[in-house]
Amino acid sequence: MSATEAKPEAAPAAEQQIPAGANVSIIPKHQKQAKERLLKLGLKQVKSISRVTFKKKGNFILAIENPEVYKTQGGSYVVFGEAKVEDLNKRYAETLAAQKAAQKAADDGKETTEDISTSGSVADAITEDLKKASLEDKKEDDKEEEEVADADVDTTGLEEADIKVVMDQANVSKAKAVSALRKEKGDVVNTIMSLADI
Image (cartoon, rainbow, N blue to C red):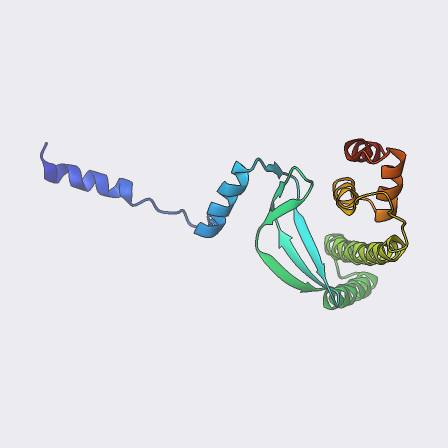
């Protein structure tokens, strides 16, 4: 066997083609490097999450379909995926129009039940997103009220650094952190542990 005979055999192996209709996603180099670094930090991948949304002002949301989600040890999440901007008001109006058209066609007997159930599930998803958004607004309002109430808390005898650590670690308001620190006589570790039990 000569060297010229070996070359034609090696060429087809080097030319691997992607079959038609294959779903191929190309990961950018910087995203791949970021994932590798995050995995070295000990992040755990959270599976079974199909959609992540971030709410912006004016009923706009950033939606990531089929994201890769990782959870940090502190409870924060890191999300990878392609974000798309959605206008909830426009989407809700389109869904209502589709529902009305589906209802009208169903009354006429021209539409199948499959189409109606599909448009209904989309409307339910939008309604659920709107409810979640309004609940988040209420939570933000509650946090603002807590911040106003926190300004009135008497912190004499306690260090601000200790109060801040307890607030961050136990995820509580300043008033709860101060009262728990007083109860535990200034012991930060026991305070955090007692608040974690609640």
